[in-house]
Amino acid sequence: MTKPALESPQKTASWIRDARAGDEAAFESLVKVYYGPLFHVLRPVLPTQEDVEEVLQDAFYRFYLALPRFREDADPFPFLRTTALRRAYTHLKKHRIRLESLEHLSEGGVEIPSGTPSPDPAVLQRWASRLSPRRRMVFLLRELGGMADEAIAKELGIRCSTVRRHAQMALAELRRSLEEGDL
Image (cartoon, rainbow, N blue to C red; front, side, top):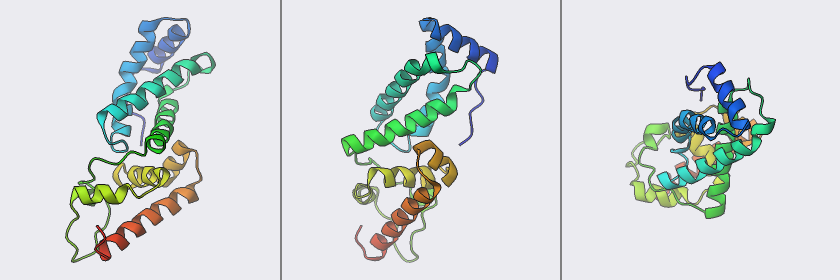
């Protein structure tokens, strides 16, 4: 996941400086610029738009609290993306959320065994709810979000080997479920 082309570093630095000084309009400008790209990052991971909005609100609040320690010349997107993804993981864990739809799973790189009909989204939803929140996050970010293992590890604060292990286990479980007709 690459950083979106947003505002100039000078404008962003100015907004950070002004927001740190208490200028609400400057902070709102930062929110407006980064909200869309962060929404795009979280939408495949969280089941509803309301969940995404809740997590983003929390991520921006944490960014606001971090402003006094935030360097003006630093790009806020990596901090916001990491915070948002970690908050999404916590949200999934806390609320034990089930995914609404995984109809695009087969389009996202998950290999369905030959001769097996493509699973119904409602059935895939029940299957995905079996995964632990961390495994679900890794699976969704990797298979649907197209993120590299190293990027997922960095964003979630876990080792790359842990990402690979969770992804392999999720895919193996999906294949096993498909082969056994347990979907």
